[in-house]
Image (cartoon, rainbow, N blue to C red; front, side, top):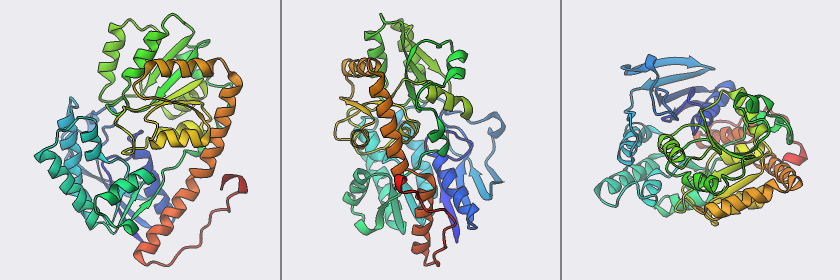
Length: 393
């Protein structure tokens, strides 16, 4: 089977959709398929193109059996709503119309409107036109959750054409100790004896991370609790400025970490956060949910109660769900888990078990391959994967 993948982010970008696009392509290449990916030059999540790539229009490379075709894309120095929309819309317009299978990890026009980043009008209608055309030209549309699938079908796309294709959890996450560990991260950042409340991932508009700063402000008199924000994104500079203005000595900003230290960071985390603005409900499902549950971390989810994140955290019984944009509730949930080590351990264990059942990498990718083979009319391959143990089904 010959596969052409179209995605604006690809390895060596480390966060967002890049690891999943890369994983799908490399899996198919390892299975003997001919795989090409059309993508941009690396820039995410820092929103900075590497010095070595500046001024380059095109590049071609072979990485782990995948032919990677890179082309220039506009990457704004300062990320605003309009510039981000232009950045992503240009890629969709130029690349996705060639797609055979169109994978939707984020309903971007819906996000922009729901978050107030884009007003209704001509530009919004143009983006929806491009989106609708991409859906209709694709032979198959895949997405992450039932809620996102319903949104796509509501746009006039045939139900049979829109199917679920989950992301997966990095297998290394399941080896992180459920208790103890994380000493290297704690030593590196002088956090040896603190209770660490961690947000790791993109610091953008959708995350609504002001709620974390406000929760930290409410607990500043407790020096043993430190809120740690790890990663990068369009809102990081603004958040750092606000934390400084508020004098929040109990908030630490840590840059994106290498893989080994990132795994140690997760082991060090006592509680992990998933935050979303109130208007974010069924338009996105952040991959960090898979990461945190697989790592066995107890979660406090500050999200809309009807969101997919809330549903998963409740169904997995992996932590606490609190109202979005409510720093008092977030702070109280952290205090509740801090005061009950047994509850934290149990939440982590249940979350990991849920992740094994739902987001096993080999099963997710083998199902994707089988779906593509059926779509193209190619004969099904006999899987070389071992049958799943009963406890992960």
